[in-house]
Each structure stands twice: as structure tokens, then as C-alpha cells.
Length: 332
Image (cartoon, rainbow, N blue to C red):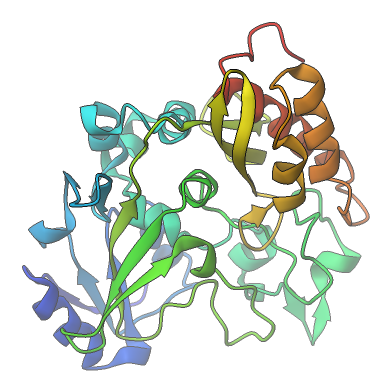
């Protein structure tokens, strides 16, 4: 690990000042479950690490005036699991339950998850986000078992690592971003927070140097139902091979509206609008959930070694829909 300057601000304004003194050479430390490994591997070598864990305004869950919730990005998975305020947002609880590590639940933060860099082994072995060597894609010609089956026609073929993003996007969440100036505040729909890089110098989010992600804002749950379903190779500490989140408005067993978002199948969380439309106006049952799942993967473009992920994504969509309607037991 390279040496670096360590800073520990106590307010958002202090954090922004420290981030902006040398924007291009600064990293943000939240829970540290990913950043520390990146530093140890020399994949990141910042001159300064800004540890934001003492910025109390970034912690906790509070109701908003609109009937929703604001979740500070330093809120841990453990705090989210223990909060009665999130009981109506089942899809978030589904994610937490599948993170089968006490250490990650106690240290990992929702903001860290949303900004988690790809787990692509080419990236993690020093070949950049695009996984190239000499300008040629290692992913396209090499082992791409765990890579994208959607949105992979360009140079980026990794999959988005965030586990909360599909569920939060399906809820219509927004994120609060501050900086570079302390009074520069943006509220960004989470679905527009992620980008697919086309050059090695681009990142995976719209965050600019000197900006800080501070809160996730959820709308009122009203009578909506939600669920997440992830497929993993192991039941222990593992990353999903594919996943999906669904948020449904049901009346008398009929779907009035739906939002379906797939995870771990594309460089960004993958919104399946056509699959959601296929549910609207239909009775919610195994047949209609299966039909929507078929639509969700109809445009998949698997790489040479990951066609199996199409079926996993299809199953994730179907089971997320059924789970949201409390119909998963006995469903296939």
C-alpha cells in the first residue's frame, strides 16, 4: 500500500474542503469494506484519504416531509436491518438478509454499496475498468463467465456491483449530492446516477471530483409491495451472479403499476420497462410473472461464456415478482 495523507472531517463542509484541495488525488473512506482492498492492491493510490465516518449528518434514517425516508449514506446495513422505519421497504431487507457476513453488515454502508467499484477480475488485476491490454478487450476474448449480458456492446463489459441499487431504483429513490461548493446541492434520480464508461478515464457514476454522496431519499411506501431476489453460487459470503428487484402496486390481485430492475447483469442497474409493462393490468400469478421474466431477458446479448446468466436473470425476475406479491412459496 502506498503512503497517503489521512483526514477525518466532522462536517460536510469540512469534508468538501478536504476533497477539493486536490480533487484528482483524493479518495473517500466510508465503511472501508472495498476501499481498503483497493488500496492494498495498489489499484487506487490517492495522496489523501478523507475518512467521513465522523460526519454525523451522514448517519441514520429519518422521515421526510413527503412521507418517505432519508437514509444517510454512512448508515450501515446493520442499522438498516434494525430500523422499524424500513419495514415497508421489503426489497431492502431482502438484500441485507443475503449479505451473509456479520462484519460486512456491521461495517458496510449503503453509500459504499452504491459506489462500489466493479468486482471484475480484469479490473481487480490492474487492467482498468474496461479490462484492456494494449487497447484490446481481455473480457471479449477471455474468461467472461461473470460479465454483462446486457449493455455490453461497448468497451465496458463488467457488471454493476451495487446490491441495493436495483431495489432503490425500483422504489424511485433519489440521491443527494453536495459539492464541490458546500451550497451546491443536487437531487438525482438514482437511475441516472450510474453511467457506462466508454473510455478508461470515465467512472461508473456521475459523481465529479470534489462531490460527496450524502443521502438516499425514498418516496412514501403507500401500499406498494416490493422484493429482491438474488442468485448466488454459494450461500455464504458471495456476490450475486444475477438479481432482480420488483416494486408493485396491486389492487385485488391485479397489477396497477410495476417497476423491475435487474442487477449484476450489465454495467449499470438494468431497468426492465418492457417486463414491467407486461405485468400491468394482469392478475399476479406464476404465469404472468413468468411471462414478464421472458420479456425481461428477451434482448440479452450474452458473451462467449456467460449465456447461463440469461436463465439466472430470468429466474431472478420471476421470483422477485412472486415474492413481492407473497406468492413465491411453491413457485418455480
